[in-house]
Length: 144
Image (cartoon, rainbow, N blue to C red; front, side, top):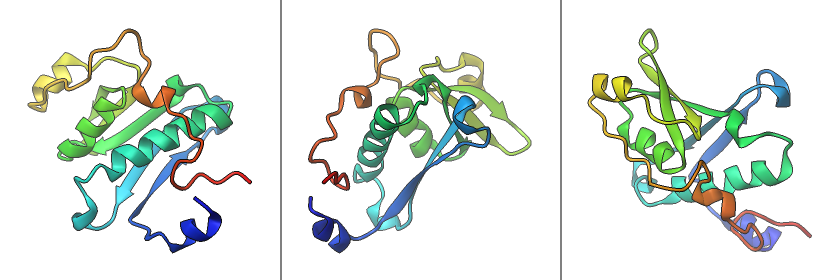
């Protein structure tokens, strides 16, 4: 897409990476799709795949440093990150949220406590589908 085409697009949410300890520490990913009308349409998974691939290609940040924190009741978001290769490693009860780390297995005890199933796709090793995406010509990516 050209810069002009990108400017005409409607913003439906955002994707962020927080680096509280700089590139040497963990990177906390988050996504927000604002309107309920825009949810459950694949936008979040598409945006996150492109975002994660962009991070892996353009930042000196090991994907194993990536984490997410999600409200325990937000099952769609938990399942989304499971499909992207993140596993539930901690349940922070005081905040009622789960912490997920990239390429880590789901903790079976936490899954049972929260009445969740592991929905992570089978794969050889920790590599997720987003690690193979070619960013050339993708939406929102413009390099003159």
